[in-house]
Image (cartoon, rainbow, N blue to C red; front, side):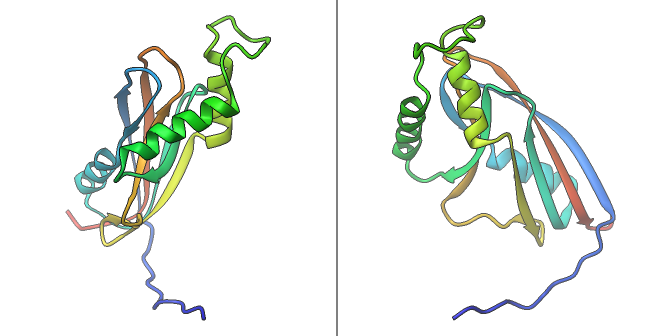
Length: 154
């Protein structure tokens, strides 16, 4: 059985954009869900969609479980199996972890879009938004946040 909820219509009269700087400490998943929620709160977002876009090709963005950190550990392990370092890659100018990082970024993607309803992201109970750093050294990553939708009157 499938059931569609009541349809809510909002007029998109706002486009708001900001850039979030994220410091990573090497290969890891850094949760940015609260940062995106603060952005939506700051602009008094009501209904629409938030686009989260990473301006890099050796890191990625994912929506993943945010309850058990073991999930992130296993995700890193799985990605290493898919694109190992020192696997005979031609592109090694920036280090043996760079080409695998590009492959992981291509697999995961660099953008996610989340519906926003009544000012809150419509994420599932255990979902969070993460920057997935695929390089072994620390990096500063830029994430563009863009909301398109309606906002509360100022």
